[in-house]
Image (cartoon, rainbow over all chains, first blue to last red):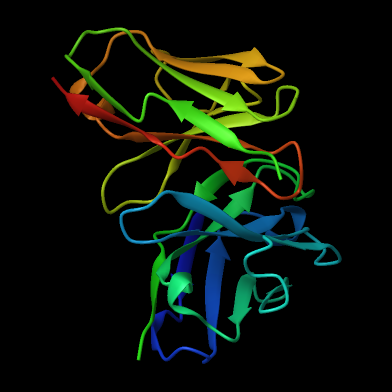
Length: 121
Length: 107
């Protein structure tokens, strides 16, 4: 069974940092692009970042470019999101999602359960 | 960035109704459009990809159509399990964008 399990969320002060992880199982991790999508409380979905299967190509939403870094360790079947200079508007549930192919320019077919990030003093 | 606009924002319907949700893109996205269903407190679920391809395991009462800038999601006969929020998403570019969502409520 394909599974994605996020961890690392929590409460952080504005300007702080946090690293999210997403452990994948049930599929050949290195063959698929992976993404992070977030949802602020009571709001819609916002794509945050994507990475190719090899890890060689990365993409970011303008709202997080220069502050967030996506990476993956294919030997550990794990996706990461390093979040720096956090702002109140980054408060959201963060989902990791599997792409339908190796190229990040695909849709998202499997989603994790999400991890909550709260940025507040 | 490509903007996605869904209508309506909220839809009230009864079990058995035929329901249609529209999604418009600010520029052509060919057929690179997906539809997701989300229930409160849970992750989104992929229903339709490439505008009209049904994801494995999704009931056949769901269908998608359109290309270019205008797309529709149709539920042929609304079931109790279908009351949820639906999102369209373009993936014509690496920077994906979602519509604002359509909440399907019980009438």
